[in-house]
Length: 195
View 1 (cartoon, rainbow, N blue to C red):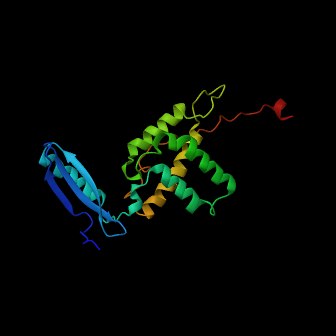
View 2 (view 1 turned 120 degrees about the vertical axis):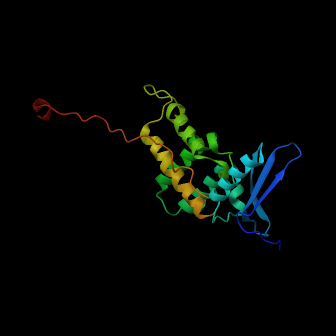
View 3 (view 1 turned 90 degrees about the vertical axis):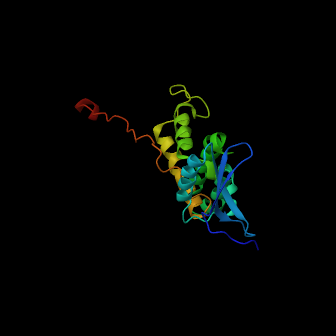
């Protein structure tokens, strides 16, 4: 078994192309070999700032081999392993539809560990304007605020499970801004309408 270095242990070096590289150990594979995360910069000072920030982000985190999964792969696994027996069939069907039609086309091929809050915010914004699978005669391609909230709720739940499974250090859906609930305006009936 390979000798383990402590999680967060870093390495700084100047590359042959002139850039500086910093690597930290963020976990270990089943065979004991380390899992690294790297940062790059033009100067050593800039690199050290980035490296310390990255070390803080991964403090007390021990990622597993599956941290290399794409978001699409993780969502498929989460739906099959976590949701199948815990939600109603209609909810599971809704989650699968959201995954296939709205999340995978935009972020499904991205590594789960590289997705940022900004990436998810861009996805929500794009879905709000262009996310409808088939065009609606009144709303065009826009999705409702309620549907965006549903996408957020499902994705937040899936990425919370990824944090618990030590695939990512924190949930990137935290910090995103989602639309507020917009209720239809209330209609007050007249006496004649009540009759």
